[in-house]
Length: 109
Image: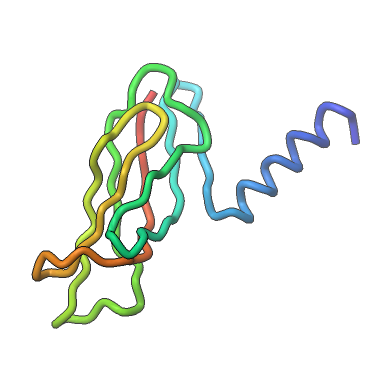
């Protein structure tokens, strides 16, 4: 394996193992996705694997908590969105901030 290919493959494997990934399309569109967990105060700052060179167009987060039930729904929202990341905030259906696992996808260029 060439000296150039080895670091690229190693970086790709490390991203896959960390459950954070991105894809850059020939059109310039970039898709990034990953997972996170908010702290007990219900927030966490997420940094994208790469910054969007022009702009973040959209980021969507979805609750992945095993503790969520029909009577204890968890809500995930995003705020402070920038080209390099965002802040996730989670709460229960009654508004109580809580720690929760989530996944996200972001699209930009």
